[in-house]
Length: 333
Image 1 (cartoon, rainbow, N blue to C red):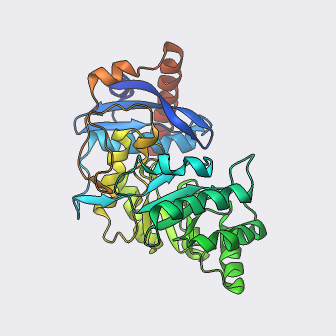
Image 2: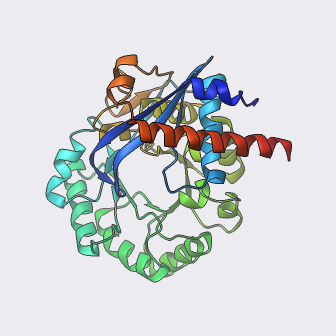
């Protein structure tokens, strides 16, 4: 992929700041830089704490979306899961109501300041809403140690779990956890998320047999094509997820899911419902538990409505500039 000149990128950038409906992993406002290129729109929205090297992959993904055609889809719709933040159990029905038709739910657990009892209650409430045939998965974002994860999953397994996403932080811990769960007879598959998208070598998950499922996100892996390669090289079932993207970034995730040779699980791409606004009209939201594959256009009026204040706009343009320089340097190295 040829990197466009910085001036072209900066000139095509619109920075937005959108409130979250409920806090999600500590995020209360989602900021993103949307860029328009000859192929359509791309989204550059690495979280503020990410360094330049990591954030540069997100810029590669945005450029791919805006300057290149996506791979041909093998399916025109992809199933998606509902996403339940670390809310009180009583709030679960209201959250799930924002995801009509979804029969799978991902539930955040191991939230700072909460305990296992909160997780057990939240997961049980999700199971009550979805019924016996629904699928429930949990996501700890690497917050547990091996023993703590095994104990927690032993209790949460009573609600019937599809899998546990990134229960521990490191690949080595995920491997140890899989072995410990097997010894205890706890039948909860392990999925790797951060160990794929934040790793220098995402294939270590495969090499150490540390997961049963891989969770892939387009932006952190550098684009749809790179993510397809990672899934193929891992050789494990894949779940495509988002990073609290706007409809523009979510459409790239749908493009990846639509192009996968096999799609065994619902994807975590329904997260536009967690935003208090969006850049597209209509938003890319699930219908009957599915999202349609295809391009999404940012709406000029919405870009203006959610335009970031001058200081944040400047911050994102400086960040984009630094990431562009990193990609140029990488190409020359």
